[in-house]
Image (cartoon, rainbow, N blue to C red):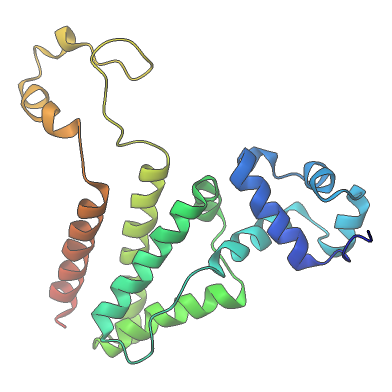
Length: 209
């Protein structure tokens, strides 16, 4: 059976699949060529540089984001965009470190940016304030999903393991001792929503909207 013609879109889709399966370190031209069953030079014909491959794979993930309808109330629209970013990050957790280094720049990604900026402008922020508010909201969203996908908030263990908590060493740290039980478990969905509320409330108070 004839192999479908190679294209940039097919390469980026295969690259995203490769990252999902094996992590970002596996995203090389040679490894991707093996996954596609082609010679590495076939990929270079369509994607000349590794940087182009990284950008294309990140952009490929953003095509799965669903934008709120244009008539959505502005702060609801802003929340919807942030939730969609987290949802897609959960689909592709291995990709999150790449997003922190390479912001998406494809057409679909720019539509997402347009939707977020439109929500902030419709909420009453001027262009300069909109840029600042967008950076604040992006920092919250990217920071949260980066720590979440990396397992930073996993409970510490009392006993063996790489995350072992030595209780004896905490005797001189009374605040850590009293808060530790509450650090051991968390509701990521609830804390994401409450954190987003705090962030949006702070933006509204700061810019008077």
